[in-house]
Amino acid sequence: MSASRPAFAEADLQLNMPPQLSVVEGAPERDLHHERALHERVTFALMIVAVLMAAFLYIFMEARIGTAALEVQSLQDQIGEVQVLSSHVEIEIGALSSRARIEAYAMENLGMVYSDMQNIDYLSEDISRQVTAALAAEQAPAADVVVADIGRPGLWHSLAELIGGYFGDEAMAASE
Image (cartoon, rainbow, N blue to C red; front, side, top):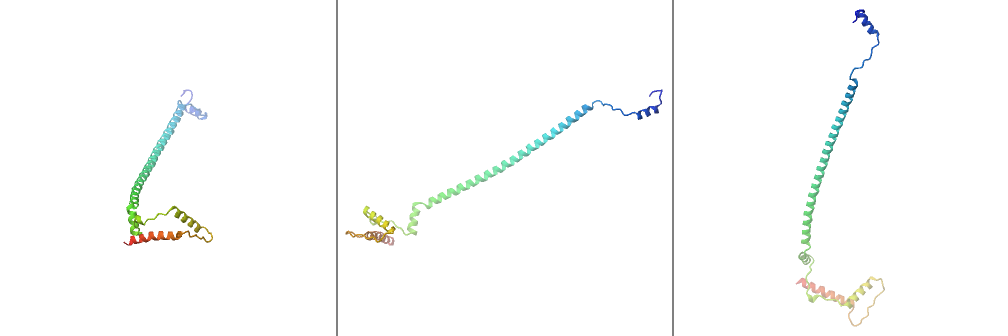
């Protein structure tokens, strides 16, 4: 304080004066430091979010891989079961289609027997043609067909004797 003025006068002067703005040293540096700290916090938060997302993605993919592995194992088990069933069916088909089984079934259930070579009659080419012609004529809606007698028994008579003789002998062989 100065000696020429009293202390209360100086205080009065300071009250009447407008406040003066004073620049505090280091304020722009403090703002810059505050911005850097905020930037570092945001960067750190984004890195944490990225790490958490990567961890979540990893866990999700591991779960999907585990589910897919279970599905693959289940399908492999099913393939194994189907292969076992397929082999059983092939064995059963082989057993059911064996010649011995078919022959036994024919003899037991259908009454079939082997015929003797003497009971087999072969048709000549002429008789075969006549049978074919007769069958064709039978199927055609033609009028009455008259077969001329040329000194041989008729076609139907020959066929009836042939078939009757075959089945007659077979019936006799089956009854023996």
